[in-house]
Structures are given as structure tokens and as C-alpha cells.
Image (cartoon, rainbow, N blue to C red):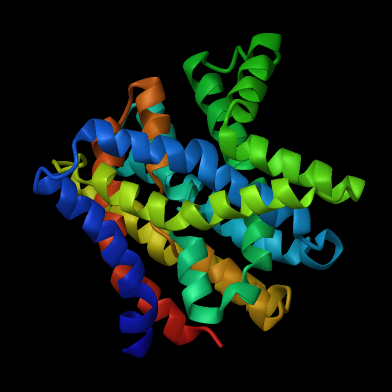
Length: 312
């Protein structure tokens, strides 16, 4: 119970403050958009840049870590896609968006602060390793899969598809921050003190600002209809994904304690707001993904606590 009170609830209270502020009319939608734009376009990229620039790649880039986490993510996508198609008879484009909601966990805005509160800041190295390829890999997969479905399989070899995927990935500020962090890391560059200090100040503002803004954004996603589909997304995201990560990490790859904690906690996060943005980009399954983000985020308070009890 102490993990629930001391580790998880403070994170969700910050989200709740943002939710309550918008609900009470103390923050407008425009103000929330500004907060999220600052967090996602500036503060969080600075956090990722700083962390990747300092990350010991040889020690933390472990194939077992990546397979444990991403096998669970892609299992969620496959089961979500097939379930949406064969159990709920959704159109193929809807199935891709629903599968993407099962694929894309909120590794950054929830995974980082909960891991840090549970195990301390020194436990985040494997989180950053996972996050460093999270958006490029999963967005690349999701966009490619959707474009193939929309073009009935005829667009796979077209240069337009490759350009669209690359442009979509590398226009994201988060990916830009990660890429610049890799450049500094691999080149051995030492940042001037004044720049490092400024980046550090921005990085410290990232998570609380983003969590508060996330609460304000969730206020817009009122649950509506399609509850069976939303329930499927919630189970695949909060149970199946971390379950696969735990089984593979512990029994197939023998990950050390820090690695298995990072893999499972990150996998146990609810779908991120980006899953709704992906659905909105293509104009499909918007109500389902928006509601799933809200309901799974609330449900994850309990499921995260259960996963923390299971971990060493």
C-alpha cells in the first residue's frame, strides 16, 4: 500500500490538478495547449537530449531489454488489431488505430516519474534506452502499416511512403532532442557550462509541467460508447504488454533487477495521448482512442501498484 500512496498517487495528483483546474474553469483549453506545447516541444526534448547525451550506451543498450519491452508492445498491437477486426468488426483503418493504442504506452510522461519515485533517479538508465527508440520505431511502424492498409498494399514500394514516414518521425521535437543527444554522446562533445546549465533548467521543468498539462488534456476525452473495445485496449496495455515484458525479461533473457523494473514499469503505462493524435491524423477511431487514453490512465493507478508489488 505504501507504493500506491508514496510512489503512484503523487504523480496522478499532479495530473489531477491539471484536470481539476480545467474542469473548474481556472485554465482554458488555450492555456492547456500552451502548457503542453511548451512541455512537448521544448522542455521534454531538453530532458531527453540531456539524458541521452550522458547515457552509457554500451552498458544500457541491451538486446534482451529491447526484445522484452517491444515484443510485448507488438503483441499488444497484433492482438488489438485482430480483436478489433474479428471480434468487433471494425474497418481496417480503425483496426490499425486501435492496435496503435495498444502499442504505444506512455513511456515518457508516466513511465519516467513513476520509475523515479519507485526506485530513484539512478534507476532511469534503462528507461531512457527504451525511450530513445520508442517514438521513431513505433511511429514508423504505425504510419507505414496505416499507409499500406489505406493504399490496399500498393504503396509499400512508393518513395512517397518512405518520405512521409521519415518526415513524420523527424519532425517531432522529441525525436530531434533524442537525435541531438546521440550526436553529443557519440562525438564525445562537452557542452559549455552555460548551455548545459540552461538545458538542465528546462529539463527540470519537463515532467511536472507535462503531467499537469496531461491532466488538462484528459479533461477533453470524456468516455463515450464502444466500451468493449476500450476494455480490450485497457487490458492489452495494462496487463498483456507488461506481462510479456516480465516473462521475457525474467525467464528468457535474465535481465538484471534495474532492467526488468524499467521494462515492466514502462510497459505497464496506459496509452499515451499520442495514440489519439495518431487516430486524429487519419480521422479514424477517434472516440475509441480518446476514451481509452482516459479510462486506461485512471485504471493504471491500480494496475501499476500491482506490478510494483510483483517486481523485485
